[in-house]
Length: 414
Image (cartoon, one colour):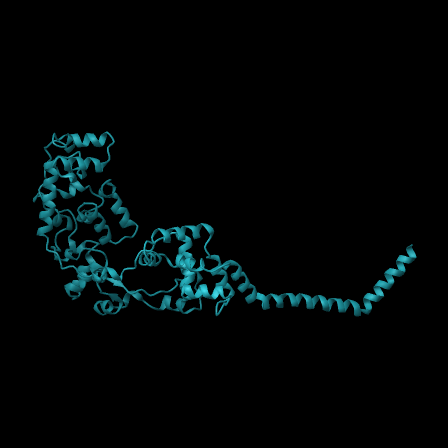
């Protein structure tokens, strides 16, 4: 059966997994296969369905009664315009050109009226012109090296992608027939891909719906299948018809100057990225930050931001790497500035902080100053509790009586 054919089985599995017909046909076309094969009967062999004699009996059901397409012919019968029916086919991932075929004949009889091509030539791997290249492959040479050898010898390297078990003439004839078939097929003008405007909601499992909820009330009292939808109005309201390729083209046509210049990475990439995120939130010039630290003025920075800035102070190794890079690129003042401009945000911050003496200690002082009142309050709460406890002990009459009894008993025992 076609569905078990090693060449096509994976595409039927894709259909079984729920992928739309159009996506599967695209995958076949990408792999160099005829996408119309997927329209054939999966229970019969491909050879039996591709035989094209005119006298072959049309044993399949008429197209109008085919389970896959019958509902679209019913839509035509109900008076819907051909354009709307073809839109429905396209929406369901089917080929809209099927509606142009004869509804009284089966789909297989109309798609496969072609004469068989008999392969009488030698297999490609035994062809004197190409056999040595297949031997090179057999010896373990990579495909790229073999194709380079063919190109060097003035041959088409794509020959190596053909089936080595079939003759060159047979495969050329089959390719020409496919091209001819594509030319003779009348194709509808391509419409922009339909993209739905998403509604973002959280689905609820049916088992979790309460009996007295509105969804339970709707479930039995409303027939969704009887609801008629104006397809044209639906598409105008809920589909995005803009061409994404046009947007990409506009973006590609923008001048190269608008693209962000790639920065030099002297420090660790992950550390540079994390530092860049922190610094982007502050929106303060690095030279201004350096002055603030130098003067131990925290300004509007809180203790969390001060800790984060302290974490990205340059280490000894990072100082050496940044200093070395700037020195190597500093033949002139302009080249030095250009080298600094190539740094990422975190490296520019580190370079600014390298000019601040005892930056780490100053950050510690700023943090201590910022946290002093809070820590003092924490300590004072504990000290106050201790003082109150001492006063309670001193003033407690019950404690005095207890201590007197202990003293008396102790003396009596002794």
